[in-house]
Length: 276
Image (tube, rainbow, N blue to C red; front, side, top):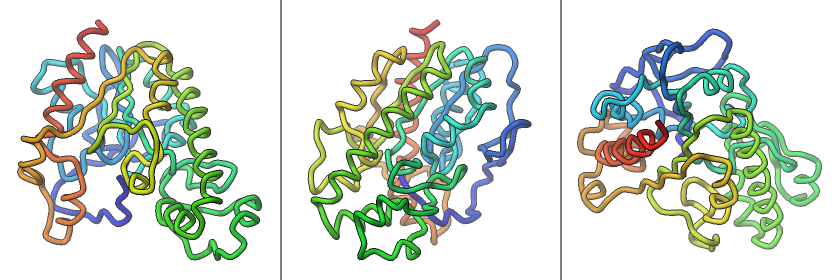
């Protein structure tokens, strides 16, 4: 899920850095010695508007190992695949949980993204400029805005863009899993289950452009795949328990709520116990 202007808000996330990485993570900073579980993911794993996101709940309420939350706001796979510190930390962890991230926030043959803020569009390749000669790419700052505009202009031309994004996601996900090795859990943590195929009405669903076939293709490279979507009870509770200012309400309503984080914690905790 994309949030372009998160603001300071009411909740203190204790943002921190670890020596060896330029990324900013949710704090407080944790020790990377002994048994711990590393959690990689985007805004949901970071826990925007959530006092205790699912990694913390697994440790605090389910007796799990020390949780090291490496979630980054608006992260794409490039953030993790290109950071040697993250790879080393995950190799030293008892297990690594990797949230499925969208296929839009990655550098590919059509465009490049910011190395740390992967949702930031930097520049279009010559190939994309040739494919969409009518577009002024200087007007775009974010990948989602770019891609939705390109699809609206030409669904036919966009098929090649989408195919490239999917292929890049698979390559990057396989690279990340192979680099980390060890015990890994791939976590689908979203409002809806993955679809077997994309349709006109599905391109705004998060994680963008990732479908069931893509998940199945990386299944053999991970110890387990866990799917978490909000139950009817969690959906009914909406933003209850979330911490946000009146100006942040719209963004909060689009996020997975506190009760969905509790549901994720139960499922992921069970999966981690199976990996002992």
